[in-house]
Length: 289
Image (cartoon, rainbow, N blue to C red; front, side):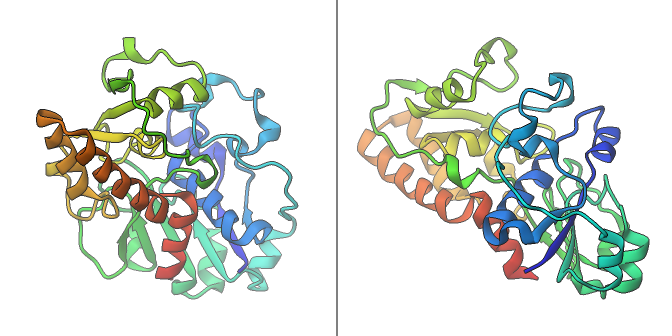
């Protein structure tokens, strides 16, 4: 399947205070590449995904710095003659990876492609929608409204980074506590992940939006999210999360039983592998279009 994935790090930076990466935009593109390889073309190269840019981008232009970065090595993506290819309907689908931040080529695309071949992704924290959802299938991360064109979407964990489960837990909670900057002590992804791998629980919560990369970093390292406030999460936000299992595990912390804990964690990790990886994210999107 040939897909033009419309994105532009310059536009993303303008809309986000200088940060050139966008988790939803970047993770979905990577997942689509896992499925279709170089047939998925980022209209402007997403620099924070490519290993060739590692160490070359100022840290002040990167939000986060772990998990969703430097995932792509060699590639043979052909970004030439994009406008002509749009005119020729060379691509099967046009996907806008961050519709509120980048609308490159849309005037041309809307003239050439039928509405159902143009897919919009909105990974912004706020629940407000771009008016184009009336015309196209629209995947919204913090979804609270109902419309036939609206579907939920979430972040994801890179498939290749899933850890081999290890039940040798040596601490109750992961070191990092949201909202407590003094606990943000890890300088490398490896040490950050290792801390979750040896922890029973990793504390997480709603930040600017309900979805956050921390949830997936905990899950992907065979650790149980201790998700504060999860019971208040809207139904169509974090819609593919095992919410009931996470709530059960959180309640278990008050009367801990290790055997029961690992029974729940095994179910949660199985769910993570099936539904919460980048490849699963891309498969979900393709199944809906």
